[in-house]
Image (cartoon, rainbow over all chains, first blue to last red):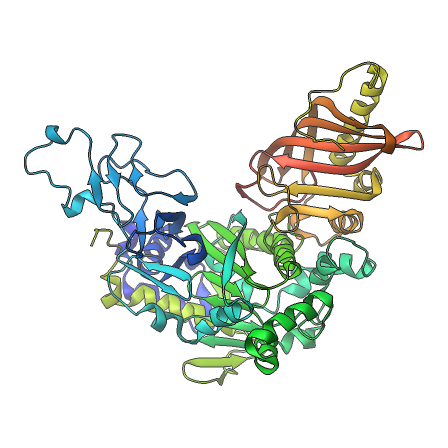
Length: 450
Length: 175
């Protein structure tokens, strides 16, 4: 592969503390290396266990470059199987999800169990004598590591490396908070999902998600629209849509007071910014009052207030997911090429919460995740414009120096700042570590079945 | 209102005469023409005050609250969408995409005389051009049209894209 010819020194020279080289976004060779060294090694979200409750349940997912079937085997273990027959390479399963005792290839009928092992082949007698169902090469290839954090299933294409817990670090807070918000103690991923493609690099989405400097400009049209619209105009959604459009109406000072926390691992989060309407943590209507009472019955008033009081917006977990615990949302960013990216957006149902709370999560998903979103569509237009601009060799560097040198310590491995591009800078620090760590890079993409 | 899907076309001339059918088609063509011309305020004015504009995200979706929709808006929300379309800094709309909305295979599939409403099903195709890209959306419309003051108003419009659950780039112009 051409990309592997790029040496560590060359890569290091592309990332400086306060600026990065445009090749990070446009160079196909860099992209291939990212797929090997970041997406070929990191823990990547692949499924939620509410999709895999019983043995035989499976869901089709993406893992870096590959399509995988995430399965619950009959012994209860989770597997991420490459959706490619071990025989002639056909894509085995065309269903997005379901329940199966075995996966039978439609081409020649090889059938595989939920752990990828070969169960049977037709015309067994026509194979040479040494042919064995148990031979490793006859299994479905699978991710060497699959692990779950409280129902969130991750897989890694590297056989070794940091554990999932080590990778997530203190970002487990985001999952904990999401689950604690459920009065029934469980969450379930909703049927609703949007997949949006944009003509830009995957990193742009991750950088934008905790960028407090863009909304005043990028979202001006939706803010102006919301400002001009009457309050409580709609009978459909308790004014949620208008409030969501209007939430970007912060003054410069307000944006500059949004706290941003970044970790050495490349993760980050920002404090919340919904200050009015039904999504504001400070306000309560009939639906929220009922919900708060449900939660207090489980946790007690004090703990319930703490859980609901955690006012964080996007929790970005490197390299490619964003968890919004407060509004029960999840986004997963899938790179397709240096200039093509998919964003998949999900929401969750909280067990034991009133239906109205779920309906608001669904509405949130529509307002921010739909391809017709009046907010997100303007973000992705900026990604497309950056991608287009960066193809120009008129200048090579991208500036990320806002707030540089003004971060403060915020506990082990954490830095905090306001009015800063700290979240973007920690992403590049993680990027560099993945891309030049020779020891880990050697692990590469190993698909061999274990 | 009876089921939108399970009815054969109502083409009994005693109920929907040729002249009425012609008026219905002309109305749908007017709607398409207003969208193509970027006359979004006039398009919005075709909707009744209690109207809903719905673009489901799942084939056959029946629940707009427990399942997310690409768009699910009543008139006040749709009015915001239209207002934003013409805002000078709606970036995804600069330059403004050009579209052609084709409406065909028009059938009146249900009548609700007491409400002076009829359900009209049709097939549509929307071709869009913006900067260097062209794309095509297609699917089916289901309009509920209400006779009021001698003309039609849209009491509801449902747009079922054939790829409603597929991968999409950002959408801007209404279907």
